[in-house]
Image (cartoon, rainbow, N blue to C red; front, side, top):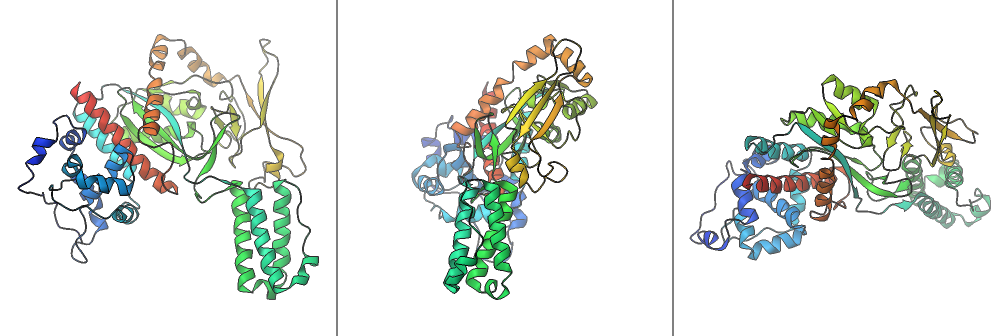
Amino acid sequence: MLSQQEKLQFSSYSSLYDLIIPKDNLLRKISELIDFTFIYQELLDKYCSNNGRMAESPVRMFKYLLLKTIYTISDVDVVERSQYDMSFKYFLGMSPQDAVINPSSLTKFRKLRLKDTDLLNLLINKTVTIALEKGIIKSKSIIVDATHSLSKSNPYSALEVLRERSKLLRKAVYTIDDNMKARMPEKNSSNELDKELAYCKALEKYIESDQILCSIPAVKEKLNLLKETLEDTQENYMLSKDTDARTGHKSADSSFFGYKTHIAMTEERIITAAVVTSGEKGDGPELPKLLQISQANGIEVDTIIGDTAYSGKGNLNLASGQSIHVVAKLNPSISQGFRKEEDKFDYNKDADRFVCPAGHIAIRKARQGKKNIGENQVDTYYFDTEKCKCCPLKEGCYKDGAKTKTYSVSIKSALHQEQIHFQETDYYKEKAKHRYKIEAKNSELKNVHGYGRANAYGIENMQMQGAMAIFTVNLKRILKLNVA
C-alpha cells in the first residue's frame, strides 16, 4: 500500500544537515535542482492505495538506485553507506535517526515497480526539460554515436553446448536401454558447427521415432532441451544466460558480446535521446528514432553530427526532408547506388563490413573496376558459407551448394553528390569538430558510472541501467553549466 501523498520527514536532528553537508555537495545540489515527485506520479498505478503493508516511498527507492549509479556501488553497499553517510540520508529525505531499508527491497522495486516503465525516455525528458528551462541548451545540433556494453554473462561456444546437450540425451537413453548405443546415429567428430547441427537433428529424429522411449520423463526432458538449443543455435550461433545479448563488431577483427546504446547529444553535452539494442545492430538505422525522440523532448534540430555510419541514403533523405544538415563523412561502402534489398544488409562502420540480416559479418571484401576511367567501381563483400548453410534466413539469400555468398555495392552514387559538395564547406568542417564530445561522454558513462558492462540479464535491465546512468551524467552536466 502506498500513502496518498508524499510526506516530508521532520526531526529535532534535521538541523544537523545544515551543519554537516556543504552547500556545494553534489547531492545537495541535485536535491535543489530537481523535484523528484515526478517519480511518485509515474509509479502511482504500480501500488495499491488501500490494501497491504505500507510501502517504502517510490521516490526514496528511486533515489537509492540513483545513489548506486552516481557512486558505482552495489545494493548492499548503498544501503550500508546510507546508515552513516549524512549526505545520503539528506538526499534520501530521511531524518538522521531513521532506519534504512533491506537491500533486497531494491531488487523488488526494480522488478515489480519499474517493470514496463519507459524509464529511459522519462528520465532523459526530465533532464532535457530542466536544461531548456534554464537556457542551458542553445545549439540546434545533435551529435550521434553508439557505445557498447558487455553482457553480464560470457557466451558459450554453440558447438560445445550442442555436444553437452546431446551427451546428456544419450546418457538418459542408455540408462533405459544400454543396447541402443549400437543403433544411435554416428557422432560428429569434426569441429564444424553445421555437421554438429546435422548430427543433433538426426539424433532428435531417431529418439522421436520411438514413441515409448521419448515419452519417458528423463529422456523427454533432455530431448526438449536439445531441441530448444538447436533452435537457439540456428538463430544466434552463440549461447548465453543473457538471451537478449548478441555479438557486435568493434572492428573487422574484434567483437564483443552484449548491447549497444545509441545516443544523441547536444553540443552542450546534454543527452537528448537514447535507444538500447542488442550488440549486432547497426548504428545508422537508429538515427530516425534518435532524431524523433530528441525533437519530442523539445530540441530544435538543424544539424546532425556523426561518423560515416550515419551517412546512408535513408538518413540523408530523412534529414533533407526536414532541411537538416548531416555532418557525417561519406564512405564508399555507404554510397550504395542502386544496390538491391538495401534495407536488409547493414553497414558496420567500425569493421568496415556489411552485416547480413542474420547478424553475420562479411569475412572479407574486394574492389572491382578501374578507377578514374569513368567506370563505376564496386565493393564486393564475401560471407562465411558455413554459416549460410545452416542459417534460418537462407531462403532467397543463399543457394544450397553455392561455394560463395557475396554482396556488392556501387561506390559511385549520384544521390550523394550534394553531400560530397557539403563536406567541403566551412560549416561542415566547423561542425565536425564537435563530434569528439560524444566519445568523451561515452567514456564517462563507462569509466565513471559502470556502463561498460551490464549489471543484470536482459535488454529491459540494460535499458534501466542506461536510464540511471544517462540521468546521472545529464544532472551533473546541468549543474556544471548552471553554475558557469
